[in-house]
Image (cartoon, rainbow, N blue to C red; front, side):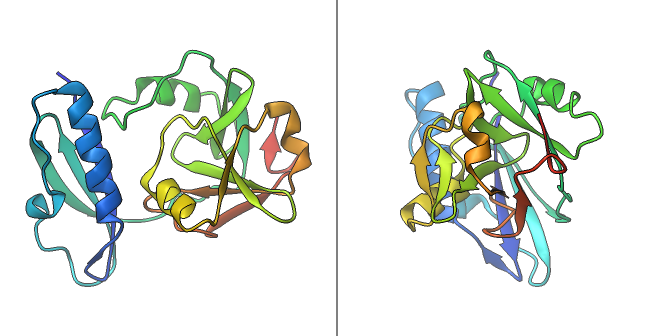
Length: 198
C-alpha cells in the first residue's frame, strides 16, 4: 500500500501554501488511484496552534490517514557532500525514504548531501535548490521532487528552471536550499571547497 506525505508550514496560526499542497496531494492521488475524487486539504486540517512555527504532517493514501502538528526546529546546514545516484526516484513525496536515507548516510562529516543524477544537480535530502550566477537564481529543471515552495517561487519568478550539469557547478557563486518549511533566503551557502565537498 502506498503512503505519501504533505508537510505544511504553520506559523502563528497561518497555514502556508495550502493551495500548492492540495494540488500536489490530488495529483498524486490521481496517479495511484484513478478513481479518486479531488479533496480539499483544508477540510482535514484541525485548527492550528496560534503561536510559534509548526510542521503540519499529512499522511495519505487514497484517503487522508493522519494529520499531526509538531514544533519546528530548522536543521542547520552549512556544508553539502555531493553524491551520485542514477537510479534514485523520488517523483512523489512518499513516506518511504529508504533510497534518500541510504544516500544521506554517505554525507561523511557534512550536514547534508547534494544529489547528482545522470550528471545533473537535483536536490539535497530535504530541500530543493537554486544556484546564483550573479544575476539570476536557477533551479534544476530535473529535481527529484517538484516541491511546493519551488512551485511558488517559479510562479513568483524568483527562480528560473534550467538543466544544471555537475560540471558547471563552479559557474555559480552561491547555492540556496528551500522547501515548505525553509523559506526563501534562509539557507544560502557559498560555492567553495569549505561548503561543497565534491
